[in-house]
Length: 96
Image 1 (tube, rainbow, N blue to C red):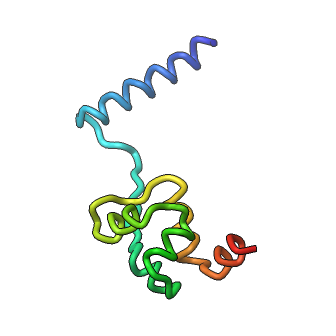
Image 2: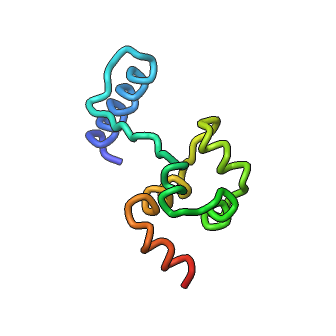
């Protein structure tokens, strides 16, 4: 690693440390709205049990999402986003 690259990396780490400690503000941030899981499910006309099977999760997990006790993350959040925007494509793909 050359000195210039090392210097850039060190500055980046120091900046991240300052941001995490609240001494600096990030240059940009991203906000994602929470998904309305119940509305997505109801839009498909599915019961909680049916939707849980479609998503590959337990009914209890779905209930927690719908009640706001927990929030979907990772691939579940991504799949829910696709279901909300293109429900027919998801249904076709998962029931092929």
